[in-house]
Length: 289
Image 1: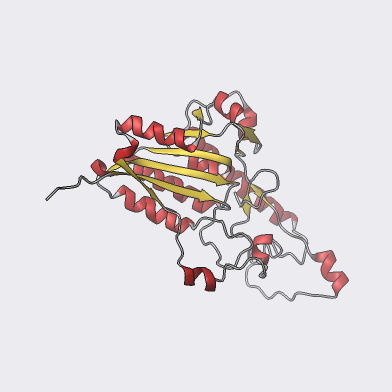
Image 2: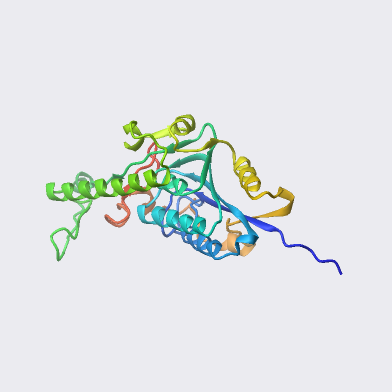
């Protein structure tokens, strides 16, 4: 009886679309990665036998996401690395804001030449329906305990106190973001202030300023991992985190964005108030960090 040697694994974790803690099953976008599964997968990888794991590729195509989930994902990547398992980022089209925080936590970053990255900033956008509600004759009655409990109420103007509070919170969050990036990418020059002013960058600019390590594709990232481990592709197995749905699941799933409108995703209701409104994506993308 012949014994078959067990192949080592390269884990491929896709992070596509808006990054948020909970992905709604009823959504305009059916391509947002379930970040809770990503975090759980990284936790499991951190507990794997180092000898059975070649490494991890974080494949990114995201305009950004909520602060907490972006930070938690980056922390889980650091946990995997602390176990001696290399983690490499591969940027497809876009990897901005919270997506870049995640990428910066990796050992090495590849990016396609025409991709966009960076956007290291924080933004909050609150809808103001005051004029529209007056035209429609719609009024909202608010009963609250706590002076600022209805902070972000779209049916009234912000007070100056509320605006100052939100500005302080945005700046505090921005400092945390910048500190994390500087810690992860120590070669980023300190004399280029536009790196941290929220603008996105081309891959060439990012390479020149040490936001990424190399211009290259997903398979360049794979080759890098294999060379680092001293193994050949035929001797490894790619383990993907992409969700596979059966026929019945596809037929009866509520992910029917074609006929259901997720007002929360559009932003009409301000994502249920203040929580999760901080964002900083590129080119008007629906990113919340």
